[in-house]
Image (cartoon, rainbow, N blue to C red; front, side, top):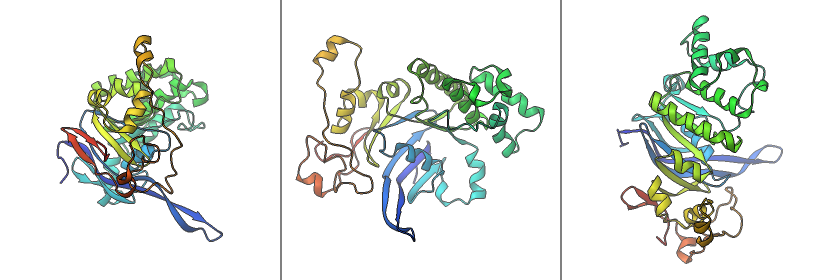
Length: 325
């Protein structure tokens, strides 16, 4: 049974993409983008999902919103299993689950004005029409710290940071409970990133939002997230509260990631030991047997090749998948 207190509960989520070849486009394999992950997100919290590019974190976020239909596994929203619902039953729930996309240049239609972009979900769900849409668009633009007079402009007239604010306003239009933030700051200048993160924090307090915050900037994740899960090649390596994970990382992959985060104190930085991982991330179409991380792990033993590590709660609230812990 899902945790009734959790807004989102993911049980053994799997998302495989077929590999097609030949004139007849026959399936010759699968890309194991997400390969059996489980976690829950409590109402009002910001849950961080981190890992290298290509590890499956963005796919996981889109699958939770059912933008991709999962290969297997279950996704609960307020105790309701979304994978069992038909499209008509999903429609009112989709209204409460939204997404902020990574690229503010690609996620806005260049042929639509800002009024049309933000107002479209209101129109599609029948929540407003005519002047009501104009009023709500103006209100949403003010909420994300933009001038309401911008509503008649087109996306090419805005900077990257302004476009991302427009994307945030669009995600807020239906008053959602849950928002997947898919690396919302990675395409922005460093000077703008803090403004967007602070805006997300303020909106969470104002509207009682719950976030799944996907990122690879570990310093920013520590600033905004309550709990953090580390993902590697389609599987979760570790999950813990923010401070517990950063102060006492258990998995060798987490330790290597955190050793790469720069420290502003030059004396601490000089004494710190960097963990350099050798080799490249294996292909998700042909992952290693046993532990996915074993081909790059400095602690790997024979058991790591022959047996998949159990996802276990090593300490209260601190989960890890590693034979050596």
